[in-house]
View 1 (cartoon, helix red, strand yellow):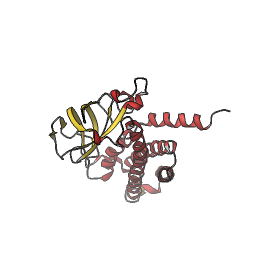
View 2 (cartoon, one colour; view 1 turned 90 degrees about the vertical axis):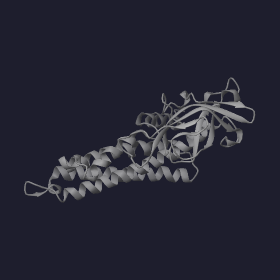
View 3 (cartoon, one colour; view 1 turned 30 degrees about the vertical axis):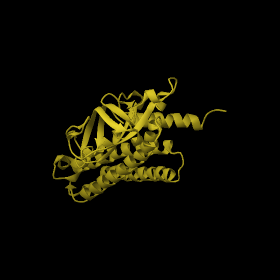
View 4 (spheres, rainbow, N blue to C red; view 1 turned 60 degrees about the vertical axis):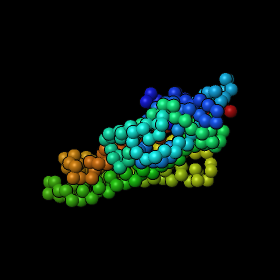
Length: 272
């Protein structure tokens, strides 16, 4: 979905597909593909303006194509190139790539759902799941950071006693525990609504926003508890400190979540 010039603003995508007989020819560039090099199936959102009425909304001029490809890097198919991995500060276990389409020919039967013009809505449904997913990852990461912090606080000593016995550290640990639990409860609520087939854009946005922000704060608090050792690669908190920022961005930034939440609140609490 993301492109070099746009991420959260999906309406600004430029990649396009033009019909040619029983095929479509795709041109454009995508960014931030998760497992782009190792995967063999990729869902690509492109504009199909010619398939929609001229006065249609831009959101009805988008179509999702399922692109089957071999794993690997370079030109993996005629017209399809997967450049090398993007070098990231964290999330090293996942290869993240670009995708370049230059005359990629795809049969029309590879349209997700079989009908052009549904791509935006399909992607948004997937994004809701993705936001709950990011919230869940943030919950796991923040829980681990809390565990590392409270363990270290009972091992490290200053002024003749464990640092866990200092009130300042206890306050920090208390705040961390509350944030871990609050984020988990919000995430579970959003997941249950999605599982039940209910509208959950509000809950998914809240869960993603709260969990990712709290994750950043809990990880930083744990990092502070570790002191100088938190900066050393031999301590696990150093890696978590690099992992947490991705969760602030993935599946929509904090500001995008707040926009979604604000719109829904005004919709739900509209004056009558």
